[in-house]
Image (cartoon, rainbow, N blue to C red; front, top):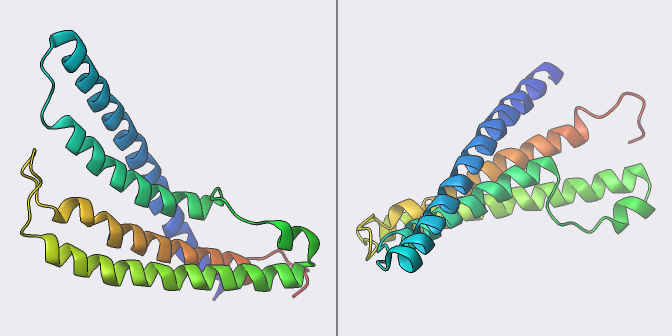
Length: 167
């Protein structure tokens, strides 16, 4: 059992490593697009028609992929007062509840996100002509990644804890 959950967490960590690179590339792309937009508008006197829309779509993907990535890394905003003042047992129970509720929220994101993707697939963005399916696809993809990371965090909490710790 321990070997299987360890393998799952290794796979999730490998996926997160790839997401980290994708996030870096997307952030650089968005920065270049916005710089190019400002340069074209104020120096060349001819603003680009597509850069704002592309940047907005990249920001949507950055937000949802970044939330999943930060969740696994433990860098999201959280209230740590319970973990600081409670014992390890209470802290583990509290963390498990949080991870479980996050997994449920992620399932809701995937479910309603896919519904939205299907509904907007025929719509196109005004400036770029891109199907609105692509920016909205970030919702179920981000939800799936949050779900995978929630399971990995639950595994960390219950199966991969240090030997000899109380529970």
